[in-house]
Image 1: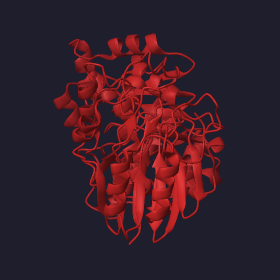
Image 2: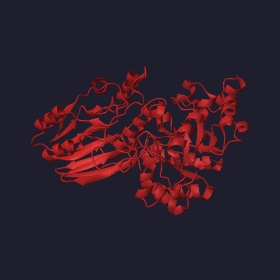
Image 3: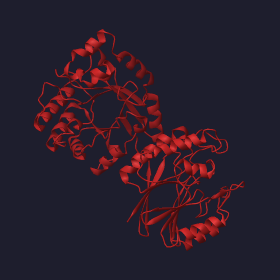
Image 4: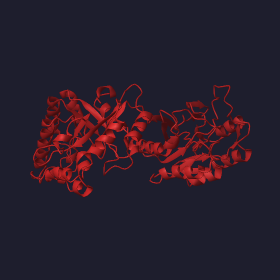
Length: 487
């Protein structure tokens, strides 16, 4: 049976350490969040049978908080349905403490028809490392006759082409000989942050993972099928050649938001290489209490907005004031509004101006419409879209999502119609994968109609900001590129 592995190189979680100064762009304190992003994105490519970490999990193993940081990292994998296999690095706490934090151990890990093997290597004062002879003998005895993938922190092979790089294996020849004797298909190392692509020596492929701790935040999906090994590198950062914009993020004013904030969201976008973000909030949530909003009173009892204003209960002034403080050429601000039962935006007239973007969304179908059948729901949806465009929305957010739980979640015959309506109004269609499975064919219809397409993460949590990889895969599936989308 094939084996699928997720490999992640040096994490260096923590603050700057004078003994190991990191580049300015190292993620440092954001490492646990970034690791969660990698797990989420990797799961879209494949379901791993095991997850392997190449060491230097924290940046200072002597710091008082080092064990807590190991616990934070281990917690990221709580929901992972795969064993986590760890080899300690020279910056981690003592080896036993490090592996125990992940519920791991040294030695042979049998996964399917393979053995994944980790070693108790010793890092020496002269910055070289050594594998004790007893460790090599134990390895050979445990792995006889079984295909092996070996994991260690220090590079084994090939030699690093840098005369100033001291972190070499003092007994590399003995290690290489043991890999020749055993059936080692792949040797995985970390430590050398630039990484090296797999290089074959005899029957073994040797690779060094590029460090995950700085842009472009790479990780690897390895597939073993018999003796065949394939390695695919993926990156969390956005394609360098494109200047992508996350056109739909939320704020701390949202009742459905978790930890998002304009400043923090822009920081994430910066690290991912985005050109900027648009920060919006549900207009109904800014006007109303949570109970009123979730009862859809802004849709079916439109006068409730004016009543909230008269009673001084709405937060629109505070929202506008605070968002304006963060506004910049790289951070646009706006509102996500809907259509009420009378055909008006869920937005008081005096609040409609001064925003960079108004997103139009359909979260509820107004109660004036019957919605017992698919045709009735689709007619109500089209009425909402038409009214939003009459009121001058800039972007139709997550089109068709309101229909996703019906018996006809992808009404393909409506795609050219809605794409044409947007094109005629000069409005954009949002490609949005949040709680949503958009049909690429709608966006193909938009491209054919000349309708602008924008990308939106619809982030309600910081780990979602700038997560546009699913969007880019949809674009590629219909022959479009990042250069074909707007902001």
